[in-house]
Image 1 (cartoon, rainbow, N blue to C red):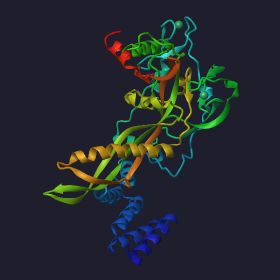
Image 2: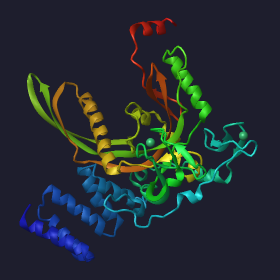
Image 3: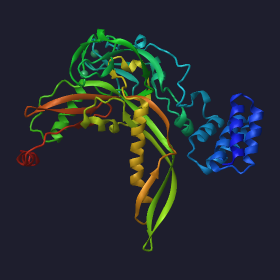
Image 4: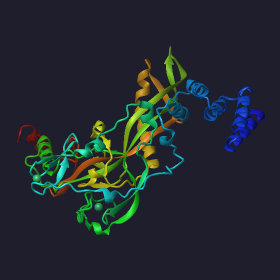
Length: 428
Ligand SMILES: [Zn+2]
Ligand SMILES: [Zn+2]
């Protein structure tokens, strides 16, 4: 970088900030004629793409950047804005919290659905279009609700990647904190006392206090009730060769908070490759796109149950609506998105570390990946339905988690003696 190009950069940025557009454009255009470094060049194109009014010219600058670094998140975002796929107001700017976020008291909207036949609890059917009584099976169409509850999935790839759709909308809600384990829940309005699904402590919801929290963007509704979860547990115990169903605590269904990330950008790496008995160093890059990287936003899940978040079909997600919380407790998130995003990046990096060697015919070694251009393209807070219980075996307690969407069970198993396994195999 020369002193002159550096000077022009400083002046250009200052003029931009002072809203002297034509002045700024002059500095930046001049800079481009003076043989700038590739970094200066990219930076200048970024500024010019913002400054110029003509969409064709804007696109030219963005194309220049993307032809050299297709993973450039800023340029990709601007291009999506330009093609009309994105409303600039919806674009994620990690440095800026949404200023005009609607503040909506969640509890005011909560309604309880009671069966008109028997007074039992109504839950959503599998397709989310109807309510069904857990007790007597009576059904009720949701009607007017339906349109608001149906998933409005964006078909536009670029827009879906970068929009904030619902993320980080702060809302005030009554939150109850468990005295036993400090987990925090939003509890339906009509429930006066509840047991903590994690530690079993009972508490009165009158202890709750109003706090600011983030409204989830989407959720997967519960697909079955208490009877359904018992059936799933029975089959699981049978499949795991328990002689008879052990005692287990009443399963508790609730929503857990999970961060849903899309990680994209570019990875570059160096590695050694063997070519005719000689080791050569290679350099390579690739564009990555990893949607649906899920990171629990709670640290209360039992260790063995963390895998449950990867057993859901996310195609079943619907837009958040507080009606879904009418009968279920929802844990509020405790792990901030910044911490969770580190885990998401780590997950992607580990997956790529395994995949990259497969694209070479020869064996490679010393793989060193530079993740500097890898970025979180979008994220949202979602709620996933789970059932938690513990069962007892030989005086010991074991944790079991049931997926509230598809009934998949993840549970701890006792370590068994050989004779017990054999009797299990031969039907004991
Ligand atoms: Zn009923
Ligand atoms: Zn607790």
